[in-house]
Length: 592
Image (cartoon, rainbow, N blue to C red; front, top):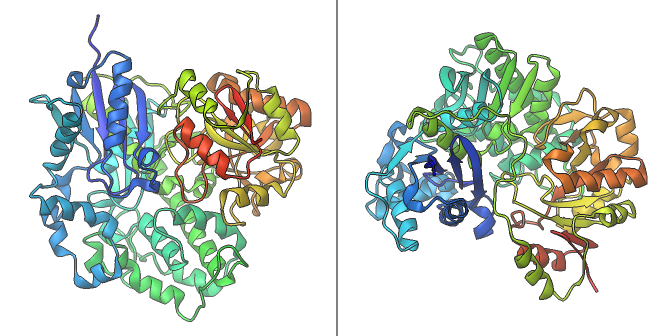
């Protein structure tokens, strides 16, 4: 039997969105996020112990033991940190008092107290995981650090299916960079240009403004994006955002001295944007109840922030085009989760094809790091296929599901793969939890851990937001049959991952109002049968009953919780919710 070559990637240091990924013989075979096991959204400062153990369990199922792993890859190269292991010692009293940057430096401080350097931390982490298994970390095993933005770029290029392309990475920060532009060809990467975090970070700016508006750092950006269309362009606010950009920049962009306190930017704190935030909020009442009437000042700031982001991202895409001449663009980094700015790039016609890595945040960097190490350190070659799904996590066998159903006390009927009854319930305006197969990686539910509802009635929005404990103004996303996409969307492409918005057609707005945001856009998943058969069949079944090949699809979780991971969690969430029924891997359940 031919020995398989295996690389396992993981996050280190463990800032947020910690995950583990596995590459075997040039294929991505497994990836999962730590938050699914700890049940803490974004897994801040949580080393991915559970994810690693579950990855090892998956590998065991395909005949690979922990001792057989050829290399580990990590998503930061601590040798490039300017302050390296002195990081924790430079936190000023004022920053400690404000709480700024705690997510960044908490783990570094913990390591230093234990006498562990950032360089030693990955090995010490792995030693602990292997010890849990009653084993020792194999001597001489390779642990390879990969530059953070290179890990992002690798995730975008290797899974785009493009032999050559331009790559745009934009996030909060890497070791030193906040934005990088690349040329990628056949697995090789050329760094063309970049923005030092001291000169500005679009990702940190978006987080910082979101916090000014009352949101937290990690959940805020998605909510601010949803809030933005409720605002309008206000000259006094727009002018402040316009002043953020310096008139001259040697790189892709540079923030002005009036917007950025570079003393704090050196250590990558959101506090660096305090001067801009003071100016932005000056004289405005930004207090509001997010479940009540929208504060007009807050909405207008969100509008201008989103507009600023869209314009800068399109400008960066233009620079990639100019630098590479490529007709293809691959994207990653936390800012690439901004589906509205991605839409503006799509409609700009700069590129013939765009691929956005679905786990564009830090949860995707272990994938890119592992793929890069597989090629550039082990001398192998990644398989060049476009990623068509992100069902990469754990799967629960039918016996485990059956046992969970039997102890649930819920009314249960086994219907197998015949999901026609689910389609009928959706057509009757019932809200249905849906759980099957392997868990999705990333922030979007894509037909394995979802909640389905009828999009044809506008009040579906308020019903589902109420069930999930979401703010009333947040939009819902649709999943739709690819063959029907042009009915609902202007100039659609096949996009399986819900991080690209499209403008809805008049027919789409009229026939699927619950899936249409107030600005006439929708963040969609297009569905083909060969990519998820049961998911396709339930949408097709709904179409046969209603005439519409589109459903509302939101993630299966309640307020403040990560997406459900196990059958037991799915049953618990269903029982605590006002959902009408649940499809649980062949079982139809309802409350007695």
